[in-house]
Amino acid sequence: MNTKYLLGGLLAGAAIGVAIGILIAPQSGAATRSALKKGTGKLKDDLQSKIDDAVNFVKGKLNFNQEEVAKNQKDLTHVQVGKV
Image (cartoon, rainbow, N blue to C red):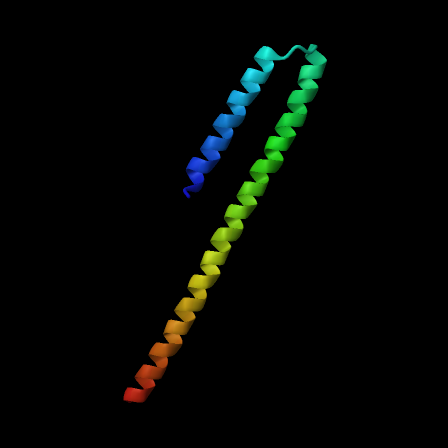
């Protein structure tokens, strides 16, 4: 999954949800502001969680690739030593 599209979709969905919520909210201004503050806090936490997951995924891929390179290098070293 492309992270750029995921983050864009999350932000667009959040913006649409906030806009609809403000338009149909039967609350006072103070209550609406409080609800918005809570909603943006939740959005921030969700977004941070997604970013952390993506970073951990990339780190895992990098570690795997480093291990593969080291293994291939070791295999090549053994092949070259055997030919000498």
